[in-house]
Length: 170
Image 1 (cartoon, rainbow, N blue to C red):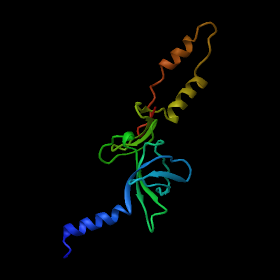
Image 2: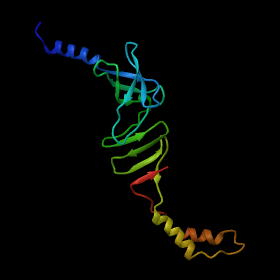
Image 3: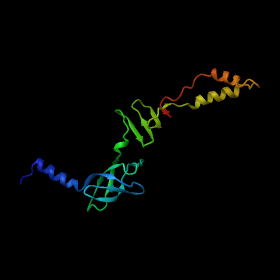
Image 4: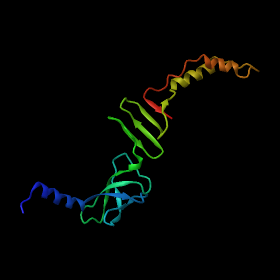
C-alpha cells in the first residue's frame, strides 16, 4: 500500500493516541496528580509546569494533556485547564486566576487585582496618604467639645486622592 497523506494522518493519529491524550484529573495534591485517562487507564503523573508558575485545578475539575513516553508507565502532565473556571480576556491581555481571585494584566497597561466578580478601583498612593498625614500633623488643632467638626473641616479642605494610574485593586 502506497502511503497517502490521508493514510499517514491516520497512522500518525493512532500513534499519537498511544502517546498523548486529553484526560480528566482526579486528585491533584502532592507531587503526583491522578490522571483519569481514556480506555480505563488511570495513573499518577508528574505535573510539568512552567518556570515561576505553579497552579492546581480544583479537585476533580481539571483536564490535562498527558504524555506517555517510553512504555507509558510514567505519564507526565504537560498542560492543564479548568473548562468551568475560564476567565475572559481581550487581545493582548493575560489573567492569572483561581476560583476566588484574579490578577488581570490589561491591554491598556493597567493591572487589576480583585475577586473574580469584583470591581477594581484606583488605590491611594503614598503621596495621597502623606498629604493627609501632613495636614493632620501640621494644621489640625483639636477643639474640645466640637464633636470632630474641626477635623471634618480639615478633611473637606484637602484635595481628593490622586490614586494609582496603573495598579487597581479591590
